[in-house]
Amino acid sequence: MEKFDRKLHQLLDDMQDTLYEANGAGLAAPQVGILRQVCIVDVGDGPIELVNPEIIASEGEQSGPEGCLSLPSEWGMVTRPRKVTVRAQNRKGKWFEMTGEELLARAFCHEIDHLHGRIFTDVAERMLTREEIESYKLEQ
Image (cartoon, rainbow, N blue to C red; front, top):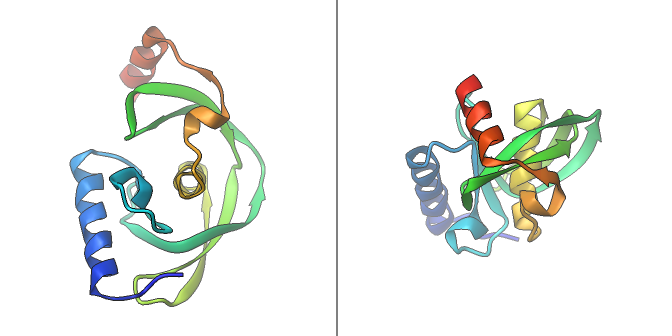
């Protein structure tokens, strides 16, 4: 449960600034020391604010390298659903549903995991070596 007030709006605004400064794809409130069910995701199509989010449907599978702003030098191979639908509230408390595929699905899962005390290293099949990380970055 959240209070949909100025304090929440400021938190979301500050999280968005932090996300962009770090050049990340998502950020959850616990990553900035705030124990609230709030996260923000932006995979290139603009910010998506999720308050009290939950994954209500998923399908398929995708595996790939995944990193985290909380562990900037670590990457692992993680399998996530290829497509997920989340149900959440916006900053004003209105419920909505959104479906994401590929990177957006991965980001939804990653950030919602943070809200449940999990990080990508908890679900990684294996961590990548320094050489694999460099190779992956060069391919970007």
